[in-house]
Image 1: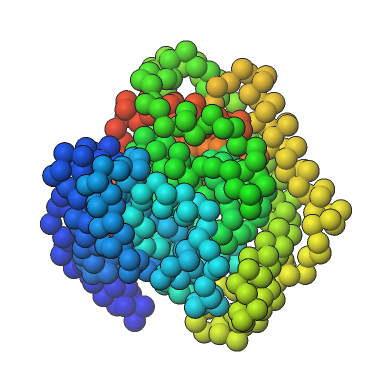
Image 2 (image 1 turned 135 degrees about the horizontal axis):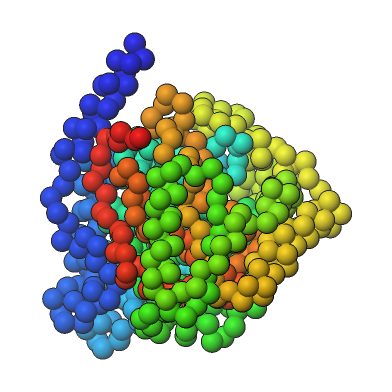
Length: 529
C-alpha cells in the first residue's frame, strides 16, 4: 500500500512539473537590468510587480506548487504605483526603487500582512512597528511583495525539526527536485529567489539559515557581520548570532540589497559598531579580478561524498587559476568542542529574546512569554506538532537570566573557538584575505527523511564554515559552485568582522569565472548515485 501511495505521489508531482508555465520574461533579471528598463521608460514598477504576482500564482500556488510564499502583500500594486509616480516626478530613491522583494515571515511589518515565524500562535498578533530593516527597504523604494515560508521558529523549536515546514505555511518544496529538502530555515526566501518569484528576498540566520538554503537552491546568500543589519523587529533566536541578510541570484544584487539594509538603529546596540564607511563600499562597482594576489584559506569538511569532493576540488582549482595563493587548513579547529556551548547560548538567548519580542505586542496579546507559546503548541498539537515537538522551547524555558555563569561561560567558549583561536588567529597566522569551504554537506544527496519524500529533516548546514562564521558573528556568503547529480552546490566565502566588501569582490570574481547558476526545472525527483 505504501509503495502505491508513493507512486501516486510522484505521478502527481510529474504532472505538475510537466504543466510548468511558459518562460518568464523577467527570469534571471538583475537589479541593474530592471533599473535600466525603468529608467528607459520601457518598464514600470507596477508592471514588474504584477508580473511577479502572476509568476507566484503560476508556480507557487499552482503548477509545481512550491509553497514558498506564505502571504502576499495586499498593498504591493499600490506601493508600486506610488513609486512609479515618484519616478515620473524625477525622484529615484536608489537601486531598489520599484524592485519587488519578499521577506521571511519572522520579519515584522506593521501593515496588512502577518508576522508569525510560521507559528499559528502568532496569527493576528500585530507588531507595533516595522522592523528597522523593513523601514530601510521602504525608504530605498523596494516593493514589499509578501512574506515567505520558513522552518517554523527559524528551525529552533524541536530537535528533529523539518526544513521548510511550518504550522502556518505547510511544506516548501525544493524547485530542483520536489522531493528533496529545501533546507532552512530561510527555505521560502531561497526557493522564491531560485524560482524567479521575486528579484530578491530577505532571510535570517542564526547558524546556517541563510547560507544553507541558498547553497541548496543555487543562489547567493549573504550573512553579514552581526550589527550590520538591525535585528529590531525580527523574531529572535540568539542575539549573539542572529542577523538578517540578502538572498539573490547574483553577488552584485546581494551587495545592493545589503547596502539598503545596513544602518545604525537605536533599538539594536550591535549596530553602533557599524563603520559608517561600509555601506558606501558595498554600493561601489565590484572590481574585476579580485582573487589575483590574495591568500585564501581552504577549510575542509570530513566525510564528503566523492562527487562533492570533486566539485570542491574544481572550485579550488578555479580560485588558484584566478591568481590566488591557496593555503589548505584542513578542518576548522575546535568546532566539536563548541557544539554544546553553542546550543546553550541559543537556549538562554532565545528565552530572553522571545519574551522581549512578545512583550512588545501589547497587553491584549495572549502570547506574553515563551511559556504561553509552549502551552499553545501543546493545546494545538495536531496542527503544530504533527511532525516534531518543541524540545528546544521547553529546554529554553527552564533557563535562567543572561547573568547566569553557565551562559556567560558558554558564550565565552563560542567566541574563543570561533574568533580568537579560530578565524582571527588563522587569518593572522597565515596572512589570509578570506576563507572558503563547500556550502553543502553530504546529506544533500540523501533522501529528506526515511521513506517520506517531502517532510524532510534539517538538511545540510553548510559544514564547519557556517558554524564558525555564525558563532563568531562574522560575515559569510555562498555563491553557486556547480551541480552534483542535478542539485546545486555552493561555495562559501567567509572572513573576519566587517570584511563584507572583500568577500563580495572575491565572490564576484569566482561567479564571473564559473557562471554556475542554473534555473530549476521543477523535476519531481532525481536519481542520485
